Structure formats: structure tokens, C-alpha cells
Amino acid sequence: MSVKKLNTLPRTAKANTVYILAPRNSNPKYYNERTNRNIGWISEEEQQILKGKTVGIAGCGGMGGLLAQTLLRCGVGTIKIADNSYFDNTNINRQLAATRFSNGTQKALSTAKILRETTDDAAIHVYPDGIQENTTDEFVDGCDLVCDQIEFWAVGARILLHLHAYEKNITIYNANTIGFGTRLFHFTRDSMSMEECLGMRYVEARELEQKINAKTANSDEKSRVMRAVIDGLMPDIPDYTLITNYSYGHSDVFYQRLRQEEVVSIMASNCPMAAGFLANQVILYLLKDSTIKRDIKLPPCMPKYVYFDSAYMEIKVCELNK
Image 1 (cartoon, one colour):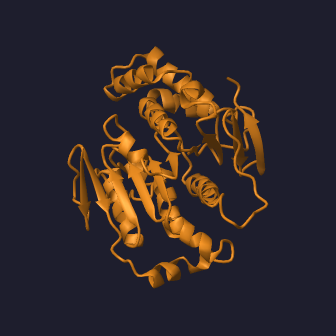
Image 2: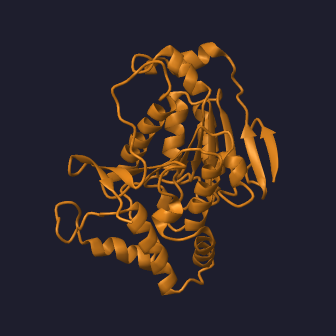
């Protein structure tokens, strides 16, 4: 794997290559001006703490791209993004860099370009190969926190990310967008692992992901992945057959689309809410050792998790039954 430091990104990425956009604007006055409205909820000293932090975001989809831009706007100094997929028109309803002009482009590159257009005083590390065995160690290295926003079917990549973070004792936050709500999962070396959460080891998960990508997975193998992800990371999906005012139809539609089209139904309006919820938690985590003491609660570690649903106006701490 080669590392290239550039001022501008290429139109297409080369395989086995990481692209680093170093800060182009080192003027502290500019940084202070663009983050000025944060001051009051955080201190000037805490703003400088954020400037020195590095956050890795695996996945540039509905939440990942929005999360990256929000953390950049908050003043986080280094953002790492990884994604090996390409934009299509179905992404336009929710993904930061998905437009009528970006169809067919690499998600990691297009997202990085949007981030660079937002501000040029931060470092952006781009992993267009996504989370792979030859990239993950480099991706998590140096991160103060990693956010797992990997897509539904990529169970191998998800477990691989968690294994490398575990080895380096780096905390991972995972959050999702389900209906009009979100779930926030907090993984550490002392928490439930992602292998335990999904009920499968990395070798099995990698094989299943490869079969799904190659369109050679049989119905039992697809069902194995579906059940693992739903039970582990999407527990207690609202039952639309009983709660008819929550959506237009039945929960069967969600599951039918997942089985037949291999897509997850996602509300465009929910991604900004869920990404903002996660971004707030990331900022509070990065400032947990600040000299300013706050009357706040960090999310519990797995198997406990935080559930928030804006349709029900409900937030609670739950526990995964494993």
C-alpha cells in the first residue's frame, strides 16, 4: 500500500493507495474565526483540543459523509475516511456527496472533495479501497476514536475494523439510521466485541461478505447475514404491522426489500438527525479529559446501547440479549 500526499485529489484512485490532503491553510486566525461560534458551549482551550484530534470514519454513506463534514466544521483537525463503493442515483436521498453529477464516482474521493471545499485547514486521509486487510491497520493507527458506519452487508469489513481497533485499544462508536430513530453502540477492549455482537468470527464473516458481493450467496447465507446484523445492531425494529401511524405500510416491506433487493430502507430526513446525534457524542468523547467538568453521560459500553426515536419522542438505555 502506497501513501500519496497531495494538494488536490485525482479523478479516480489507484488501487492500494492512500491519499493524504495536508492542511493548506495554517493561519490560526482563520481556524479561530471558522470555529468561533462553538465557543460558549466549549471553551477556547477545548477547541484547540479538537484541533489536535484524529477521527476515523469507516463508510461514507448516509451517515458517514455527514458525520465527517460535521466533525470537520466542529474543528477536528484530522479526518480519516474509508469507502470502496461508488455513488448511484439511489444515494441522492441521503448521502453528502451524492448529486446528479457524482453518479458513478468513488464515494471516498467525492466525499473528500466536498470536505476540502468546506475548509482547507484540516488534514483529510482518504482510503478509496475501504476497510481491507491491507488498509485497516493504517486506517485505525493514530485515531482517537473510530466510527463504524460500514454498510449493512459488509460484515467482514466491520469485524476486521473492530479487531484492529481492539488491538490498538481504540474506542469505536457505531450508530445507525432506522426509521425515524437511531441506536448508538460503544465498543472498547473491555466491552462485548463485534464478533460476539454479530455471533460470527471474522473468517466466516469475510467469506459470507465475499459471496454476497460476488452474487453467489445462497438464500441461507444471505439470511445468516441479515439475522446477524438485525439481531446485533438493529434490535427491536418498530413493528409497522402494529404501529400503523409510524410508517405507511407493514414491516414486511422493509424485510422484503432487504432480501430481494439487498437494500436497507432509509429515510432522507433521518440521516442528518442520526449523524448529528452521533457527532455530539463524538465531540463529548474527545473532550472527556478536558479540565472543564460537565454534567453529562457518555454512552454505556456494549452490550448496553442507547436508543433514540424522534417519532416516539423516546430515549432509553437498552441491553442486547446475547
